[in-house]
Image 1 (cartoon, rainbow over the protein chains, first blue to last red):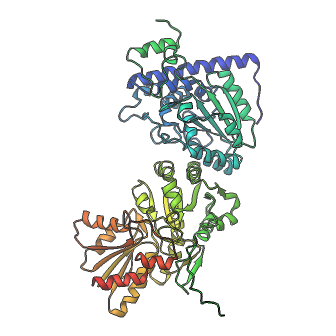
Image 2 (image 1 turned 90 degrees about the vertical axis):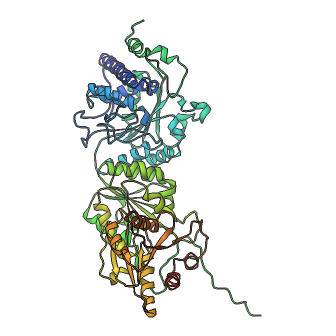
Image 3 (image 1 turned 180 degrees about the vertical axis):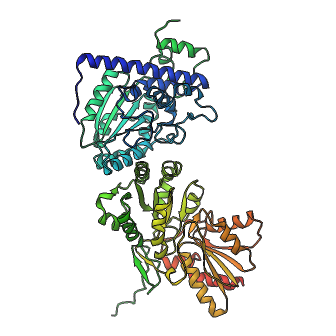
Length: 288
Length: 329
């Protein structure tokens, strides 16, 4: 496959559409957070641009049939960080796999949208995440199996920088490289934040890019809140034919809502009841 | 000067045979059964974690190189990848040693394979006490770990007959399975009886009026030997073979337990959480007060040494079973 460079104006228009998609994803996530009065909203806001370039309706990187989430030819997007489910539901609503009206059931009894992502509950949720360090191993098997079957679908695994602590992630990284799985792409959300605090103080994972390269991966590091940079990274990865690729995305938790961006970084960001509406307004650039 | 007579050597080597001297055996029954199945079913694939050669997976690998995936010494990645292969429509058999599949990679077996109910067949070699190599390789508690895992079907075969007949049934079963593998030259025993392996079913291989052995895995070979030997003492022993540990065939077990015979369970596994406790719970839950005597490994980390020595020491040998019956009658 070769990259088809879009004319400048077309590319600018695509970026504008995907940025709008990212804003919608952020709104959807805030709506879900407000339903529960809590949630991993900081992470969802931070990763929204990344999810937009994959799921943005009409423009996303993934080959999907939103109305047929089991279509055999679909690209697989594996969410191993189960607590990011709020963000993926928002993206699946953007893509049209989940009806928008359904997101208000998030985390409620009998909802198809549980707090932690589970494949058996939600259309479009490929695996049950939550126990970290599982996604890339499953992605490896899917990549092997799709290639074996001659299915051109690609496999993406969204993992967090915290997940790089898990040895199983690196077992799988070695296996993907050993088998030359060019159909596998890891997407690492580097938000520098883990359950016990900032990543450098929990377990030093840098230099992340060099680690992936040493493991035999084609590594691209971009500003994960810059749609233009994300698209350029995906263009580069699409051209790889012999090795798996990793898109390392530096993101900012709470991105898009200034008063949350500047809030003290926390794995579980507290949001007061009155702040949800203000957060929606902030996304739309409305000053209160 | 004459050389001193050397003491007869025993071995604590990793790979040791538990077959009796002169016993009929079949080579690598798992690998050959998988090859036969693979000829009919193109979706069958194999994986191993740097132990193909020691789990009889090399037989499949050599015949189907494009359908075998070497995952390196990485059991977590292997079970995750097996799940991924099943997710895209293939039927994987993934082999390693039982200790690694259960102790080391349990989270992956549980969440990637069992929770979604995938047709992944995990094949664990050196179950229970089938190596003299010591606790690092003796999977004495694999059944205890796995019996509590929802969705999982668990098979502990007696011999090459069980293995050959089980492999296609494991592949046909829609959900995940775990096979306690006997590898290398595996004894052939059950073809002398009117017996077919049927997944999920216990089978009365031999009737008897005085004693009821309820046994699984290679211990059925031993209980059959013990029953034959006890004939000389005019003791008539029955053998109920329970190759499927989960789901347990409680109906057949309860039918046989409603008896005044001496009941002895026999398993190649710790007394904690294996067949004996499963049978005892089945009886107790049904209100049957029969005393059940377990022939099982002790709740200990076991010694290294030669298998015959260890099977004697820990009560799994035919001699030990016979002595136990005579003491109890």
